[in-house]
Image (tube, rainbow over all chains, first blue to last red; front, side):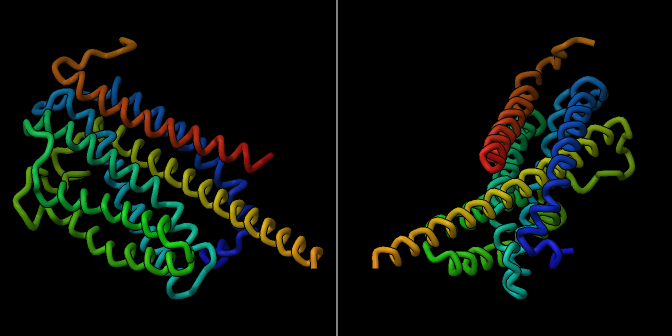
Length: 243
Length: 41
């Protein structure tokens, strides 16, 4: 599948069908998910209505981590097999991934205020999520600062791959250290189905939205490269004519 | 069903979260659609 899509032309064909499918799925799932989250789910006994924040906080956290994992995997593929689209794919995921991390931190801080009485505490999960945001920023900065794009791809790829060590830290930080966060409860005992519905719908919806964004950003990147190439070729033919 | 449900003392926190999330999603969607229109011209 990966090697099939490594060809820009094939990717464009795939995107022609995949982009509207993911876009429409995201719109539908998020709309229904938000309706469930705000209008059709019960209050929590302990956290009352504040539990509704978790329906958008948890999916954002899940996507921010998955996006970084996917970015690291794409960087590894680019590193080992030198697939032309793998670096483009990794780069396209960085900005949406960073945005989801900002959303995770912001909604998490607000949830923290309602549940624990504080916007921020340097506990394992919050700190490692903040590090994740810095990794995203570092990755994007490398692409922005280094002019030689091959070198930029190598260094950014290394940041993505080495930084992926942070992902299990985020996941298991609640087990390793004392934390305000609770351990994994999703689907466990005491987890009500009426609360699961908005959560799962929004997880899927966020995933589809992220996929839609990534596909379109890859298409943008392919288009930009094509335009640059045409410009260079035109410049070269103009020089030849002058000679 | 109320159009804007009353979430009591947590209302400001809940609406801030949903508002911020909506803002980010709408921003990305608008930018992506604008870029897609430019690509298809």
